[in-house]
Length: 305
Image (cartoon, rainbow, N blue to C red; front, side):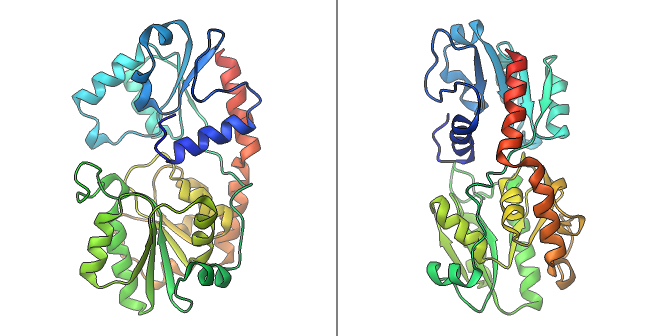
């Protein structure tokens, strides 16, 4: 695992806990039957002679077309020599893989861990987290800034779109307060400061705090241009948090009214989501709860072996 304190690490630990297979995250034994490159960018940390002797599954979470340059393609093609099967989440990424490789590709969605995302009282959560009790809280919990300089926007995550949509909402609501968490939020923080929009930033909260942050919200905005998930789709749905999203990644799990276009101006009608929408999202996400989907992964990996 990449050990980046990111979603990939969490999902690896969840698979370790709930899979029917004998799983190791940090060692390869002589009798290991299969290597799953779940963090595909770390593939070259494993000696090539070991990869050549084992069955190998590689997960491609997503690829950003604008960043898939010649160097990245060559790395893909080198790794492809050792891969037996690919796994991804969306048809778009499947099509890209198939344009570069003759290896079979399996689509299996993310799972949502319904054991850790728990509905809590909104007002109590705000009180515990010292968030404004009487404001319209808008959340965003994913990184938005490139790590190379900590100021350039990570455009595939759409931080410029996020700020634009928050500004739209501020035009007809004078009580907006933004709640941020996660790594590398420098771009959005700087833009909110420029616009004089109030916000709270909790950089690296633990999972229980993130649960309370979600439950505190009136609205969560997903603004990505390119995604494999994002996980916030599933977490908002599980917690019945009102969410609007670009049509990206696995947003098909959300109600149609929750989807907006990149260039669409956000108005009161769009964010006026009701229990009809949150209950729809919640019921739809039941299809991919932890036990159901990990069972599908177990079956797939058994077939590969």
